[in-house]
Length: 627
Ligand code: FEO
Ligand code: CA
Ligand code: CA
Ligand code: CA
Image: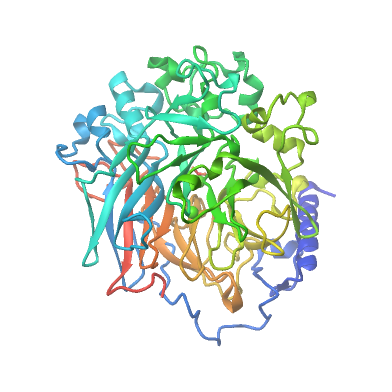
């Protein structure tokens, strides 16, 4: 048997077992070898195998789809209009001089919107209202691309000290008050709430790992007080109006030899990939030779109260330390708070946290501490369609001294290793994990995993060399999110169904297929909106798609948005009325340089480089987005 045949067989076995067990119908003849190269949409039990083209169009998503063309523009369907809300370099305070990319200073960058906007949270003003016209926009600035930021296109490792200071100031988050007047959004630069949070902002480490001696570093004698956040990818807004931001690819900010530190095993398991910053050349804090424990301060979920600009952000160690994509909170029927989070690296895991204390809608001060104590779990997806949440509790099972855990704090600091010992299911890069507010089901975006081999498939990750990713759906059978036993199902297998085995509604159009699902949001009807990161590798523009999640149009994805060349799309977020959709265009023109950019979006001016920007989209004349 040749190896190609073996691979096909392994794939068939896994998917076929899964598909028959779940009772899925297929509209192609079989999932044999031929199906790998031909069209093979799979519909769900709720569907029928007959063509649906004669049925009515989706009731709740009636927009006209865009096509897949990669170009320099930002596009939305007919009948919609978009506005650039805020770009890298835009002042967020009064009295700041105009942005000049040729004379950047750290001081000015600290008063301006940062680079590479990722997650977006919108919280209404005043606090407690449901305003869709006035609020605070909180945005992550995940990382920078010096060769697109600075004239002369310096590569990441060759920044001058002055450039490093600007670079540092362009990371973190921005809080910006915004207001809508007659359908047009404005930034309020005089706002008392506006704030930049950066790698130098004082923060507090909380939860069982706080004060752990392993967290002592040259900026923290007590392992409690620390500075800053960076590598902030996605996040979530809590029901009590705070922002959770995920520290993701933080290893790349450090220089020095991690293998010589006494945390070498932890760092190895954490994943030390490309070193793309030379901050450690000038500042000891980011040099592991001089400050070997600093990297343990990173990889957490940070909770920020945007309504209190003086508040100190808190690193929530109870949620575990790994490469957090984001974090989304759901209030269980019994009042316990459940937080879901993904670890965005190939073969990493999906986690949930259940709070010890209960949410009290009348006591915000108490809610601000809900993420302080509770139980962390990691997901094990089983072949029989159940999902077991394995607790990461010190002293239980293998999480003892025998395996070098001396405390619950150690379990949080070494969360990945603890999860390995609990036999968690290695996933294809978990990105956003979010609860549908209408159905209570949870959706995880799994972006892709080119390293998935044919002999390590599992039903939740059923494709080898997974270029396109999938979306998985899971839920507690009795509706109790604190349960350890859930059920799960594949919601979508991405990719072009003409070229790969894919899972969509059979009526998904040539424009409706997607690749590399990354961030997501739900509108007020519970429709799923999916952003992509990496679809351009399949010859289609990155952007946003929407689908209903149940009923006869489940899995019928339609393309709603297209973004400029080089960019990924992230941060989708709706105002409470679902009439405004915020989204992030991150790293437009990536792969090119300041001196020769592949696009100058969004300014298209010869003296302005491409700029990451937050866009807001509305229906012309108003109305629910997608209607
Ligand atoms: Fe920063 Fe998970 O992408
Ligand atoms: Ca992301
Ligand atoms: Ca999201
Ligand atoms: Ca991503």
